[in-house]
Length: 447
Ligand SMILES: [Zn+2]
Image 1 (cartoon, rainbow, N blue to C red):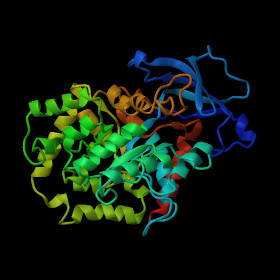
Image 2: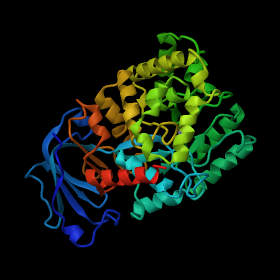
Image 3: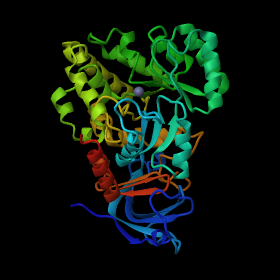
Image 4: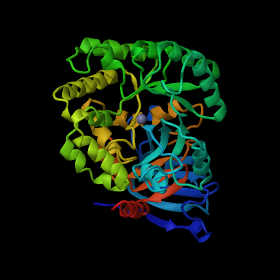
């Protein structure tokens, strides 16, 4: 049965507070919730019948119902016995450029940012910067724009932007000065260029991550300190596993090597399954979430399935590669590699926020427990970004990134796909807010 969220007392709304206003000093108490804190010391234990108090963008108190002082002026939300957990992260996301591109309306950028929230994604590691994009971080933090908290990689390092090792070093310095959070690596760099980049990144104290250029290879990239390997890139290439069967021993050696160097992976299994031609084309065409992307984007994705040059006309090897990728993820999980949740949205049938419903089942199919899947998008991400802020746990002092869902997500993962309430850095989005906005987005992109 669908439990509704009742807002008992909306003092702040009467004072003129609306969704987008700065959340700076609002006090909100979410009552009557069962809390999955994702604090490692709590493990999978659920704290039943709790109250969570938020002030501005922070969680300030949690405790058993009745034991927590609720300020008189607080907005009180009845959580209706639902489950409360930290908001999720998209660790390989994309944010469109500020200026619209061919055939895509101006509103696309803001719709993408909202879709992340709609899908319960309250943090995005943006994996390809565009000029002026850093302004979005400020706008969202200031409350003048809806969206998840952003950590952004700059424009990519690739064979076009890096001509030689010297240029790689200079570009690292430029990105640090400009204020990017991460250096994004694309294919095409030579090993000397990659080495120069890695050395300069270390000197400057900035991470680099992304693809594994062919000339570098997975072992060098890991030794040189890539922070994450995205898309599990480079692993199967190293053991001739893109088209051929591989052994568990080969996969385990790669997993142990990754673990030994404290490198994380962002698997993006669903997106890669689609790209390599191992997806179910009919199922992809029927994804209901396609209605939330502009016609031009949607058509581009659909065209991929029919393009004779795409991997959908490539024969058996795609299935072999996908099987190898799933076994690789399973063995990485067994070996304790840091796995971070990411879907590469918006990319080929990966609709921001809503793409989690495609990725999570594949993580489960690789043997990950529901708890560890949730952890890959919450507590692990908080650890990853601990130099910036505290989040990814329900704990006093953590950023108020919160989901309220109908069922216990440890028992039923799909309850995460349609949160009853999303709180992003203290800003509140109810199910009805989200439903209304999704309907508006769908209507805008209907033609
Ligand atoms: Zn990407």
